[in-house]
Image: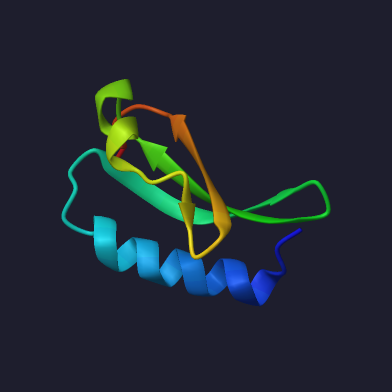
Length: 71
């Protein structure tokens, strides 16, 4: 189980690492199993392999949500 502080630190590290990846459309925290994970939203499945499965021992999950466009 990962606490919120560790997940926030992992999120910051991952944000810096993926900031230039056009397939990544969002990075946040999510609750899972009594703890936290880093959740990465990607525009399509081809971007998912570029996202690591964990950062500093914190689980990273990906979800394909499509491209985000302004209304």
